[in-house]
Length: 613
Image (cartoon, rainbow, N blue to C red; front, side, top):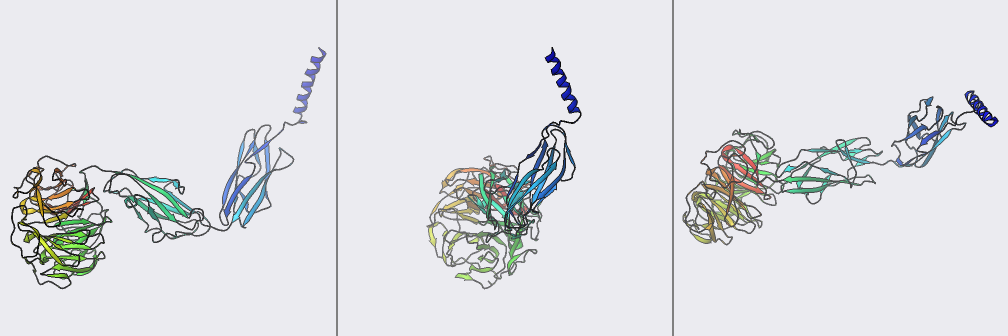
């Protein structure tokens, strides 16, 4: 009983003493982290780190002072206003910046005075000052890239079309000038599918001062189907990222026989409208008869009634034109016709070789012209003699000898530099070498390259009638759009006739010329033929207002151009043409780029159309 009374008395006594303040419960201030290490920081650069203070338990803690001891390179920028009272489990944030002014190790300590202890709580601060240096940072929108690890993925894009333009920012977050050291380009695209991604660095500065930015843009322009990958590479003077690089990825979709749009009518970009007026301004055409695409994807157009050759980029932006009696790419209105070296008279077609030389079937002047890629006239062939000439022909220079032409409507140059000409009114195919020397011609009812004067046209399989277009495949076979005979003819490069297709059935035939027809295995006045690298033939079936596709075995695959997408094998309706973007009116020329993108000179609609194969 006495023990119980004594224990109760002891509890009462402790309570009285604690209430009087003679004994305190322990107060503890927790600091997280226990110290700050800033690592290497360039002189002139500021780095900030955080410290969290917490009253773990017990009575309130009052913080009365913060002091950084030993070095002024460390500064408290957030949370240093005192006094600060922390109740149980309360926290408080301190932000401390390190901006070194010397090279080498830098140290200090943060001293926190408070009533939880008679001694301040110390937090060690360390860092290393290094010489001023640039530091590259690359971002797109709110996304920053880590060199070597990250990837930008474009949205799905149709083959032959462009993605949206994506702009990337390069920022110098260092303390010295950032220099982009790439040469000849500041920013490079490398990798497997480099030619599917296009970069624009016209707004990109080579030198970026600390705290500044510059930009570059990229877009995805696929010309084959599937997933495409490349890499952005930025050479620079940031020693830690002196080749900043990240991946690009895009998925290219191919929807066979799909219209992608057209250019002309004073518009930029590929249009899907239905009105296209004739005109002679930079972005207009007047009955374009032929088109061609160079290795970079630029489009050349024989703008016949404007007497000029136009150039557009693959995005549908007009670049300029040549002709008009002087050299150079021009951006003024159309040219007048002429017979001077740098003039044209109703040019019917254009071809660009792998070196960038431009060949023109200058139909009204009865000659084939050659220009360089800078828009300078080199010379012309024809006129009854060999060699590239720079003189002015006197009016018409047509002839039937093997060194002359009469209204040539098409020209093709093979990989060896041989020039093939559809000598339209002479009903023959002519062959010249790259030096401008005539080799001979084929047609007129017999095999072999001939050098005699032309005999006649005909309907047998070794003759032609009013031929308009031609093309060659990678094996050297010659395909002829035998317009007057409603067929496509095939010859080997030795000048031997193989046969023709058309007439309502498949296979290469050697009979007399067929009648015109509207079914998918017939033609009506075909004006051009193109053989792609896979051996498929694309025919401008002009009066049937369509583009036909056949394989090299002579089997019809289908046609496009009735106001809807996809290749069809139904009969073609008799039509006078239409203006909508999925139709044609007298499609005169056809060219296929990379086996997947079809360009059509839609003559009477005064535009160049683009379709997916």
